[in-house]
Length: 391
Image (cartoon, rainbow, N blue to C red):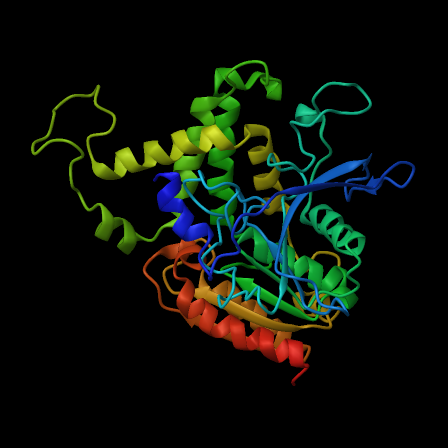
């Protein structure tokens, strides 16, 4: 796509237009970040973007929590030459699900990531070298602590809403129970209060692929090509879980990639279209993501359990003060609807205001990133009611 083609998009009235990633440093010594594992660290650099305008009483701010491999660039374009906009551009902007003509939207890269926020690839101020696997063990609690501090640093006492899908939804739930006074509404999409054994298993296979790559070098690979093949394989495995059987069948079926007949060759790795697609996804991922971050963030997901330390899920959710919107997708087998129903049931036990719907969509777990119009039709009125303070 040429810059001339792109200009029609970033200058469109429904786009937030050209945006810039901002950076700030939090937890300056001696006030260091206290990790859940007991470690301390500071300062912490946080990469974030904002869209729309904060109103006079700072009551229209929405924080977007990104999923596993996302980043702060959720909407708009960094330059007219960009081939693609932010990862949720179809949902954030004037007149969209998160309407930036009404709301001030914030999205920040997670702690432990590799897109501008402090993570394993950052320089350890104590040694002058990259952290690598010496980075503190990470939990969702730590990520939310950093983002809550970012919001305070922007002069926002209370968020209208925290919104996220998948790992982002886990962050939303953690925020609702850990910083209840800071959240008026929570939007949880295609997520759960804990990862299933199946989800943990797929994460384990992905990490094993990275560990087994000779280029991994115990995480100290930044001066070399690193575990390119292992990271690509991890992405290929994970990407299968983001799709549904129907979506794969409709898009690829058993069609061959570049021939009408079988090659009958063990040397041809990408004979079927689905094989070529997965190899492409793996190759693209290696170009933009860090293997150490992938290890930390997937293990963090494994450890998450909202009910831990509270006796029960209902007791944990009883700490929240906000209203909830929960959505699942009928073809999502990574975070199935049964897990959302468990969350909703616990919320009803503690008499929280909760709206829930299972959406029909063929795209599997990735539906919340793809099928945006039905989601916007539900989220928009929910946010309007939260803004108005309606019961």
